[in-house]
Length: 153
Image 1: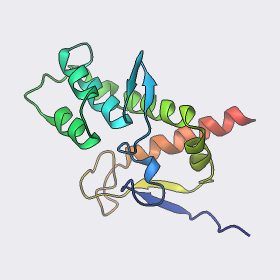
Image 2 (image 1 turned 30 degrees about the vertical axis):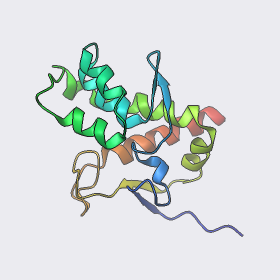
Image 3 (image 1 turned 180 degrees about the horizontal axis):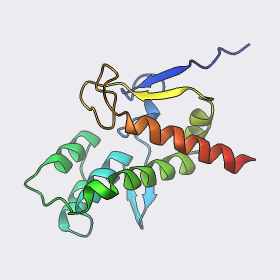
Image 4 (image 1 turned 90 degrees about the vertical axis):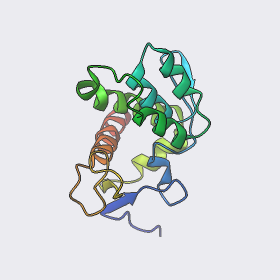
Protein backbone atom coordinates (compact mmCIF):
# COMPACT_ATOMS: atom_id res chain seq x y z
CA UNK A 1 0.00 0.00 0.00
CA UNK A 2 1.35 3.44 -0.82
CA UNK A 3 2.17 6.04 1.81
CA UNK A 4 -0.64 8.48 2.54
CA UNK A 5 -0.10 12.00 1.21
CA UNK A 6 0.89 14.35 4.04
CA UNK A 7 -1.58 17.08 5.03
CA UNK A 8 1.10 19.73 4.55
CA UNK A 9 3.87 19.47 1.97
CA UNK A 10 6.81 21.79 2.49
CA UNK A 11 9.09 22.42 -0.45
CA UNK A 12 12.05 24.64 -1.26
CA UNK A 13 15.23 22.82 -2.28
CA UNK A 14 15.20 21.37 -5.79
CA UNK A 15 17.16 18.39 -4.42
CA UNK A 16 14.46 17.47 -1.88
CA UNK A 17 11.17 15.64 -2.38
CA UNK A 18 8.75 17.94 -4.23
CA UNK A 19 11.73 20.01 -5.39
CA UNK A 20 9.99 20.23 -8.77
CA UNK A 21 7.64 22.78 -7.17
CA UNK A 22 10.55 25.21 -6.91
CA UNK A 23 10.92 27.74 -9.71
CA UNK A 24 14.62 26.81 -9.75
CA UNK A 25 13.86 23.24 -10.88
CA UNK A 26 15.42 22.52 -14.27
CA UNK A 27 12.24 22.07 -16.29
CA UNK A 28 12.28 24.31 -19.37
CA UNK A 29 9.06 25.96 -20.48
CA UNK A 30 7.94 27.39 -23.79
CA UNK A 31 6.12 30.69 -23.29
CA UNK A 32 5.58 33.79 -25.38
CA UNK A 33 7.43 32.27 -28.32
CA UNK A 34 10.61 31.50 -26.37
CA UNK A 35 12.22 28.65 -24.45
CA UNK A 36 12.96 29.48 -20.83
CA UNK A 37 15.42 27.26 -18.91
CA UNK A 38 13.30 27.50 -15.74
CA UNK A 39 10.16 29.25 -14.54
CA UNK A 40 12.48 31.46 -12.47
CA UNK A 41 14.09 32.71 -15.69
CA UNK A 42 10.64 33.47 -17.14
CA UNK A 43 9.32 35.19 -14.03
CA UNK A 44 12.38 37.38 -13.47
CA UNK A 45 12.66 38.31 -17.16
CA UNK A 46 9.04 39.44 -17.27
CA UNK A 47 9.99 42.24 -14.85
CA UNK A 48 11.65 43.79 -17.92
CA UNK A 49 9.35 42.56 -20.69
CA UNK A 50 10.05 44.23 -24.01
CA UNK A 51 13.49 45.53 -23.02
CA UNK A 52 17.00 44.20 -23.65
CA UNK A 53 17.06 43.07 -20.00
CA UNK A 54 14.37 40.47 -20.70
CA UNK A 55 16.65 38.54 -23.04
CA UNK A 56 19.69 38.95 -20.78
CA UNK A 57 17.77 37.33 -17.91
CA UNK A 58 16.42 34.56 -20.18
CA UNK A 59 19.99 33.68 -21.16
CA UNK A 60 21.32 33.61 -17.58
CA UNK A 61 23.33 30.46 -16.89
CA UNK A 62 21.59 29.44 -13.66
CA UNK A 63 18.22 30.20 -12.06
CA UNK A 64 20.05 31.95 -9.20
CA UNK A 65 21.71 34.24 -11.75
CA UNK A 66 18.30 35.04 -13.27
CA UNK A 67 16.95 35.76 -9.78
CA UNK A 68 19.84 38.10 -8.98
CA UNK A 69 19.39 39.94 -12.26
CA UNK A 70 15.67 40.26 -11.66
CA UNK A 71 16.22 41.71 -8.20
CA UNK A 72 18.83 44.20 -9.41
CA UNK A 73 17.14 47.57 -9.14
CA UNK A 74 19.67 49.10 -11.53
CA UNK A 75 17.48 47.46 -14.16
CA UNK A 76 14.20 49.33 -14.85
CA UNK A 77 11.32 47.40 -13.28
CA UNK A 78 8.14 47.62 -15.32
CA UNK A 79 5.63 50.05 -13.80
CA UNK A 80 2.76 47.58 -13.52
CA UNK A 81 4.83 44.82 -11.90
CA UNK A 82 2.99 44.67 -8.58
CA UNK A 83 -0.36 44.30 -10.35
CA UNK A 84 0.77 41.60 -12.82
CA UNK A 85 3.36 39.51 -10.93
CA UNK A 86 0.93 36.85 -9.68
CA UNK A 87 -0.63 36.40 -13.13
CA UNK A 88 2.86 36.05 -14.63
CA UNK A 89 3.85 33.52 -11.96
CA UNK A 90 0.67 31.56 -12.72
CA UNK A 91 1.45 31.66 -16.47
CA UNK A 92 4.87 30.16 -15.75
CA UNK A 93 3.49 27.51 -13.41
CA UNK A 94 0.71 26.56 -15.82
CA UNK A 95 3.26 26.10 -18.62
CA UNK A 96 5.58 24.05 -16.43
CA UNK A 97 2.92 21.68 -15.10
CA UNK A 98 1.17 21.20 -18.44
CA UNK A 99 4.31 20.86 -20.59
CA UNK A 100 5.85 18.23 -18.28
CA UNK A 101 3.41 15.37 -17.71
CA UNK A 102 5.54 13.89 -14.91
CA UNK A 103 5.30 17.17 -12.97
CA UNK A 104 1.56 17.35 -13.51
CA UNK A 105 1.30 13.85 -12.03
CA UNK A 106 3.34 14.89 -8.97
CA UNK A 107 1.17 17.98 -8.42
CA UNK A 108 -2.09 16.04 -8.82
CA UNK A 109 -0.66 13.33 -6.57
CA UNK A 110 -0.54 15.78 -3.65
CA UNK A 111 -4.27 15.32 -3.16
CA UNK A 112 -5.65 18.07 -0.94
CA UNK A 113 -2.42 18.71 0.93
CA UNK A 114 -1.50 22.30 1.73
CA UNK A 115 1.58 23.23 -0.32
CA UNK A 116 4.05 25.51 1.42
CA UNK A 117 7.24 27.06 0.07
CA UNK A 118 9.12 26.92 3.36
CA UNK A 119 11.91 29.47 3.41
CA UNK A 120 13.09 32.31 5.62
CA UNK A 121 14.33 33.96 2.40
CA UNK A 122 10.88 35.02 1.18
CA UNK A 123 7.78 36.13 3.05
CA UNK A 124 5.74 36.91 -0.07
CA UNK A 125 6.11 33.83 -2.28
CA UNK A 126 7.17 31.68 0.69
CA UNK A 127 6.12 31.25 4.31
CA UNK A 128 8.91 33.37 5.78
CA UNK A 129 10.33 30.21 7.36
CA UNK A 130 7.99 30.41 10.35
CA UNK A 131 4.56 30.49 8.72
CA UNK A 132 4.24 34.28 8.94
CA UNK A 133 4.69 34.75 5.18
CA UNK A 134 2.00 34.84 2.50
CA UNK A 135 3.08 31.59 0.75
CA UNK A 136 1.73 32.89 -2.56
CA UNK A 137 3.69 30.29 -4.56
CA UNK A 138 2.08 27.50 -2.54
CA UNK A 139 -1.38 29.02 -3.03
CA UNK A 140 -0.90 29.41 -6.77
CA UNK A 141 0.25 25.78 -7.02
CA UNK A 142 -2.86 24.67 -5.13
CA UNK A 143 -5.05 26.76 -7.43
CA UNK A 144 -3.35 25.23 -10.47
CA UNK A 145 -3.85 21.75 -8.97
CA UNK A 146 -7.60 22.48 -8.80
CA UNK A 147 -7.62 23.68 -12.42
CA UNK A 148 -5.79 20.57 -13.61
CA UNK A 149 -8.09 18.33 -11.59
CA UNK A 150 -11.17 20.00 -13.09
CA UNK A 151 -9.80 19.45 -16.62
CA UNK A 152 -9.57 15.70 -15.96
CA UNK A 153 -13.28 15.32 -15.18
